[in-house]
Image 1 (cartoon, rainbow, N blue to C red):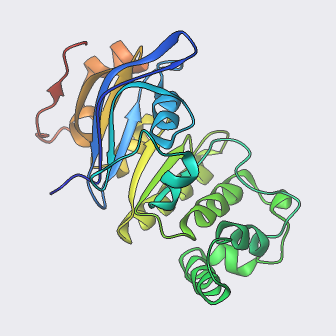
Image 2: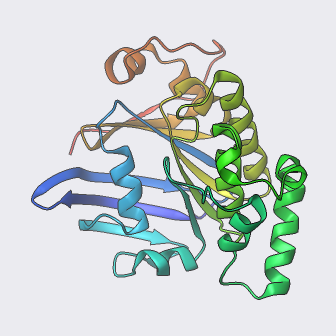
Length: 254
């Protein structure tokens, strides 16, 4: 299958400080890919460089066979890339319906109304509370609203930065179920996440990032059962099914 997103030899920096060192990743249509690694390893920086918020100094970023590095973030978004940041991802003084309307501000009214109807059907909780202020929702409910707003423009690739941050285990479970439901509609999803087990449980593949480099990649089931990764990179023993998983692909440091 032709990759939807291809990142090749990417380097990026904040000023003179290089954070990402020669990273290669790819995402195919409709799959869920998780980017894992310890705090400070560059996960969010990598995503922001793909989105255009952090300068890429070297490498290539192809989305649907188009090179993105010369495009502004708004131009990349217009090509079909959505993003839900970890913080400040809803407009709290506005209602659920108003948040969704803002997500579709580029659309004609009839298209926006149709897109809102699709989101309310996909997320019944939002339909029940469409007149409720976003600021009165729980953390998990706001996360669902943020995802729905990002989906209004029907992106074919959606980035989620720490979607379970600050949520109770129950609310985190619900959010990950929603992520799986979104992927079932055909949208490819890239998750940056600290909740390793839940992220891997719904993912097709994963990349492990350490100090700005991909040190391991492979099927999510393989990474979930590899204790070396848990001990060396994630700071915890991994647990998962013991069935024979597909092999991991180790990446030599750049």
